[in-house]
Image (cartoon, rainbow, N blue to C red; front, side):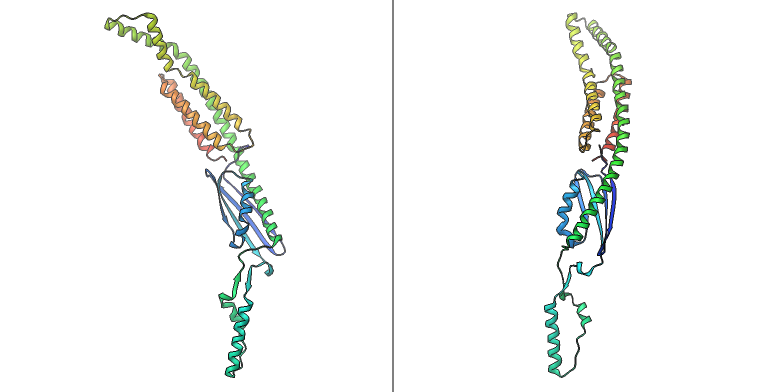
Length: 293
């Protein structure tokens, strides 16, 4: 089942000590490119979460936003350097004693001294980490559902377009079969006229052999057969469970190669027009495939 690379998902959780929400947005990308918008205190868990995302996605530029509000002070990673604060207070008391002044330190001023405050750099509360991980999985599921919905819409559109291409191949084949005898006769007439004008003599069997060789060079039956095989193969990709974007893109390139050869070989205006129509529709298919994972 094809999935779109673009999508949006969201999930939130509210516990006694915290409130959190994950948002996931994705755009097209040749590879899986993850961009995390999370607090630095959670960087230690990013690798684990990346593995969780990779279990769901294979391609796309994915942005993951975390909104986290911690209501329990015990969960904060901030701490006071008590040793330094006590030392500073002792020095203030000695100063007051030596000068004979009665001094009561203003503890509020400790709040404005950055060197007294330390950040452990990480949040290690198991319950909070579990809540973050489980909510991320829910957001990924919501995001993946959106990608599946868009992928199904793309699949429906592509199936219609590839069906049109199959019809065009058959139309080209019918025209080519109708014009082949006519083309051979034209070549035979031109060669005969040239020989008559020049007065040269040639073995009729040899002339027919050379004409057959020339006709074979403008025959497009092999290219059309390969096109039919490619188009049938493309239809089968839609039933696969693994990502098919790269495979479809490759098959479309092969179709372009074959139809270009048909256009170069064709000596018929009607066939040339069908080739142009085929290439225009195939280009639309390629544009749509760029959105698939």
